[in-house]
Image (tube, rainbow, N blue to C red; front, side, top):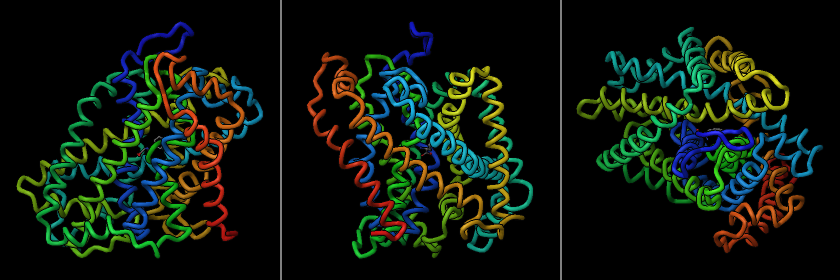
Length: 450
Ligand code: PHE
């Protein structure tokens, strides 16, 4: 990044901007959350809804967040305010900050598991020789005090990256390491082909059974699309405020959506054949990937090396996502509350730490403490992904579609007419009608009013 004349940083290169945006989008959402959500919601039916949401709602909303962020060079509050939506900024802003802190809390717990798995693979302590041993191992690793420690370690690492300004180092490292993660996923996909449950797994994931599309599936798929694209909480808006004028916003949005879905699909192709080969229930929930992956590694020559490398890369992918979600509350505390960056980072980390510990305990000592029938972990996940993010997206699409001038949007998409963007009309139509209507109807449907 270099300094912009308004005093704000700007990404030096187009590639840097795209890589960082993809870095935010690709993370545990694709590799951990997508397979478990698809497993709970019937596989193919979920997949088709998810892809529709990514491309019909996700891409237009990504463009809208990009336009608002780069056009105003501001955080979520400032972006709404500068575009004449002072009142709306008081709704969209807190909603985004709440969502980012909720996500950071449970995300850190899962990222903590990746650290545990990486170290256990490195020392050869991971025993997944049979199903019972594997399950026992998972329970061992995720209950008790260890997950608390790893959650703290993860949040501290995130904190250090944010305060010491080594974000740039992380960006550079992830430019090399994320393609490596992608290659590793492709290699594991090839391996899936040789598993006995390959056909069954692929059928489960890709054959849609339309009778399985219920309100729960629609809400889950929509939440997953928002979560995976880091949408609806101002994260992409904040990142776009660092984009240079050279970045083509439409192209960046499409690239992000394509790469992000590709990684999720790869993860599905790796997990489901293994699920059926090793007789694990696809409906296992948040623990699914952590119970299944080690089976795959266990059967590969040099399995522990693959396993160590994979969990290390997953840990880094999580960091590039948590750095981006932390940025929302930090820029808010800095730019709106005039706090120093260090204090803002301490405050955000402290809040996430409190939430993270509650989520970590949800698998152990507090597993029977439930609210609306959900543990803290599940509640934070549900509230943020299925409620806050779509609600944030709803506000953003109406605001960008109806309130912000068409010229502003078109200037951002075409860099003031320097290059063509033939889809401005279709894009505004999506923002005005399609996105808000779809989100609204799915909400009504999920609370039983439709
Ligand atoms: N998109 C990230 C992932 O898939 C998670 C995330 C959500 C990041 C919201 C930033 C904001 O892992």
